[in-house]
Length: 195
Image (cartoon, rainbow, N blue to C red; front, side, top):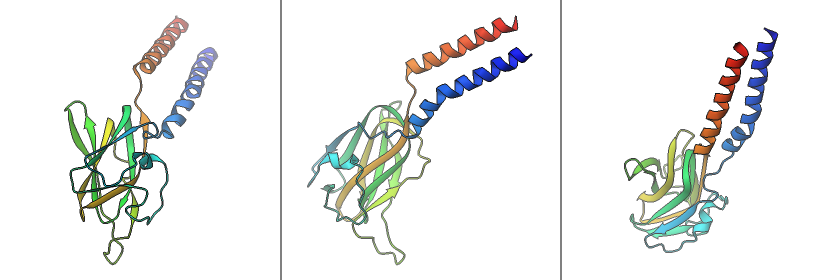
């Protein structure tokens, strides 16, 4: 009986030790860190490297350190270089405009709506001046390899200066194979000790 308790306790401890690095890596994963950003359409100004540089400064003028465009047609496309689970997004954009974030759904081969980035007003219902950071909350649950940001409504002059995300990489097939073989090995050892 003591051998069984010791065996199960050591198995649980070993499993937890092996999972700690994976959990800490997943919780601190920034899906946009190595992404490729494309500006589709005509942009008045646009340095796409500014969009994921981590620099957020509230109230900055709409045309300062941002990508800016006129009209609803241009879009910002972000290639995540692999399927990623995104739990929340933050976008710093012109406060008097609304934006739409879509994700690419491989199953339907189409863009699907993820989040509407609303315009920002103060208590007196006046627009807050400049660029303002808006956060989606942590309930997005997007699983995709691409994101697209486009203008939805506003004054016709749009700008985005920062896009941030939190998420976790989806398990790779090799990781699943390793997990499966480890569980199979544990089942074999359990059967062997029970005989």
